[in-house]
Amino acid sequence: MLAAERRHAILLALNADGAVRVADLATELDVSEMTVRRDLDTLDAQNLLRKVHGGAVSRHNRGEEPRSSEKAGQQRDEKAAIAALAAQTVEDGMTIAISAGTTTTELARRLRDRSSITVVTNSISVFDVLTDPAADIAEAPQVYLSGGVRTPSDALVGPIADAAISSFRVDATYLGVHGFDPQAGLTTPNIAEAQTNRTLIGIGAQLIVVADHTKYREVGTNVFARMRRVDNLIVDDGLAIADQGIIEEHVGRLSIATVMRQP
Image (cartoon, rainbow, N blue to C red; front, side, top):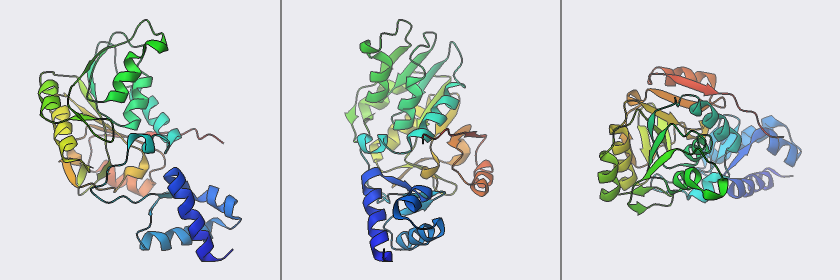
């Protein structure tokens, strides 16, 4: 297979799944992992993808906001591991805020039987998970959903959401992000969501950010917090060791979730 054909196949796989892994591509294309890495380097240089540790992800423009349905199928194992670790930090009796996002929705699935906690959220998906009558959970948390305008990521944002959220005070805010970067901070492509995220951060005694490793150095148009504001950043073990060292200098705590990847 010619290099151009390989790279076209890589882009097709990326468009289908939103992310690709070097090992998987090497098997599918019947080439060495080194060859795949060189192809990814070339495609990254052409701004056709963004190379990350162990593979590559789609490259979005700074103002482009992927839909929740698109993100849900990406990095599933990583999000599950992060959510499991984040759930361990939620203590009985706590009142917490949970933002919109596919990783925070995974966290919500692990809190459905925690009747002693109260949840404030601007996420339609989080609210659905925690209040779904079909789940047949007798001991569900108390959940408050803000109003607002719906975004492609299923967040409710805008003045109505901000007013509702600001009436609460919570023990911790669990926040999903479009990207995190040592220099840029926490970012999102949506200006209204950035403001609502600031409101969610403002009501929390502590800020816990949940983000898989592909979000590292992803920078959206709108900055809503600096890294030093983060009390605990929970990320999966796909984040390179060198990058872990960099992040540790900018946040209160860095927690690494070990991923049990499906074959």
